[in-house]
Length: 384
Image (tube, rainbow, N blue to C red; front, side, top):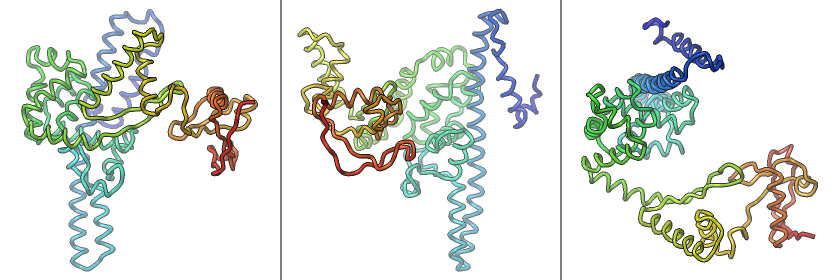
């Protein structure tokens, strides 16, 4: 169907995308057997993995090509410096920086000091172009570049398994991430021991192809710890300094409050919540164990008597029509996003019943500004 030479061109790949869009599009149950459908799903999974391997090879080649461009600009910068041309030197240095990739992140899994000075995402022109091509965020683009360089330079067995469709891009990313602190030579050792050559009788299928994500992480870490225990301990010590608490939205007006903690502290906190839930359940509490743990988590952190008696200001922003007249215009909570108007009205009513609601007067309408700019004056409102 496709000529081998033509297929590797951009036009050939576009034709492949067009052909794939017709797979399974007839919608007729009798068009093929279920066995054929399952076989095609498996084949498409291999295609996805092979496409990821091709992207890795192209990305690595792009980085290498741009590095040559960067070297040419650095040479130009030296010429400008020798000639006393400061503006030319600065412009050439900027071009060189845009064409280079800070590969310190590949070896350490972290951005260098120079990258952090460059911006929050540690971007270069190379990363930005890869991110744009893959329709990903710049941060994800940097991850793809690191993955491509690790696979093509240090982990030939993992790359070969990806090309053969035996591992997914996600699995390959797991292997690279878990070995981020290792040297190039140590990367290769882990790659050979965990994955091994593609085509060894039964080896790949019985190992990487049959493991779940957790088992793969466990196996990779086990080998990495043995190969370089010192760097693993250094990484663990550094990770403790990055402990933090974050919040992110979840569906249905819920949210994830996540604490990144040292292992011992996290286990202790979870054990305390589990013990509290078991005690409450033994005393006749009808809530589920998970509900009791969540409620106990809130009450112990906030000091309030009940989980739903929230005394802090959540800055719920809604129109007067949604608050008082049942209008359906969505409300907004800063740091969370849009919430249904009915849920916001219920939340406000419950707070007013408990004499805990304070209102601020908006300066501009929701429809005009997209969000309220609030005055500093607040007033207590009570349910009447």
